[in-house]
Figure 1 (cartoon, rainbow, N blue to C red):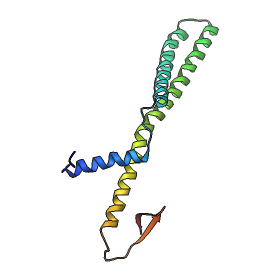
Figure 2 (figure 1 turned 45 degrees about the vertical axis):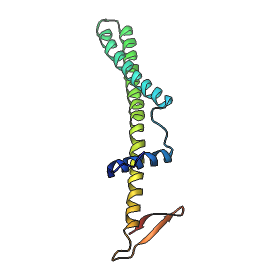
Figure 3 (figure 1 turned 60 degrees about the vertical axis):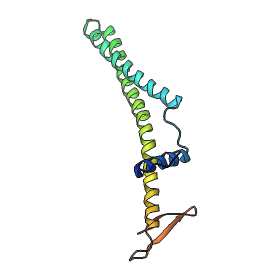
Figure 4 (figure 1 turned 90 degrees about the horizontal axis):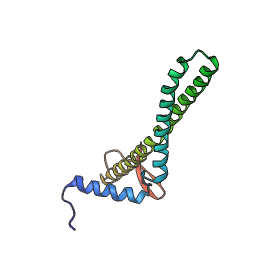
Length: 138
């Protein structure tokens, strides 16, 4: 296989290799998908409970039946809020995981570019982390 002549393709290939080296777990794992679906289902169940109990509270004059329907409706609201929070948490996790990996890669590339520029007009002290130069100290 020949090396790509396009610099953006080479950069993309390097990013894929660096991402694999970081050993970031794939966001499509079964547990994350399960929690994402459970959150969405709980959100929908809560909305359905809330909508269905509204007519029940207004369809009767009996205060005991109204209170029962209000308790079920309140349970639906709680389910909707908890389900929405779980769904939001697990949907953002996948996005933020790769955003953090991208930030790490960009900072690594910036550090390499600064290190490769050579001496400038102002001497710059380098910071070494675990034996590797990562960025200049201001």
